[in-house]
Length: 170
Image 1 (cartoon, rainbow, N blue to C red):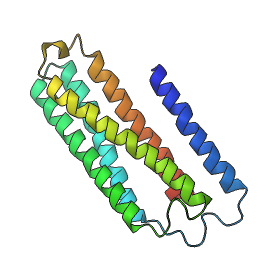
Image 2: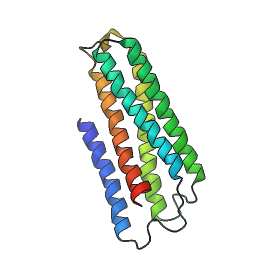
Image 3: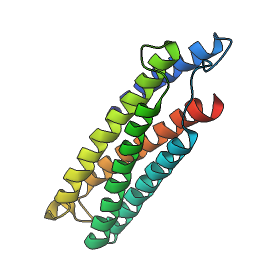
Image 4: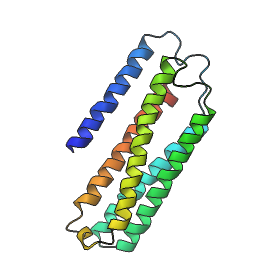
């Protein structure tokens, strides 16, 4: 929980920089900025599905249903990978770069750090996928699985904030 709190403060500083710049700029985002709303919305849906799959995985672990837990975890991992693919494709389609202007710098810093967290989460989820076969992951001793699940839900919640600020509020 302390780790997640420190991550929250990190992303809060990025949001503070974004909204500070936004409030002091007349035209926001700059005129030459075109974002693909459809792709980012589909990516958001994939991350939502992934988060819900992790919720169902932990419930399956509570009920000692290891096959169901494995299946839900696989869905979560695949949906997370789909999110990464969509995000990387979106970067190639952007009409601006990190060096274009302050908006570009903040956009790539915010979404890039989030994407790094998603990749780290996928690695953790993959480790959990293989670790679920261990006797240590019984219903009474699954704090590791729960901690990874909390991290993944945190990553999704941060994305909801980023998606709202960058794509919806504009």
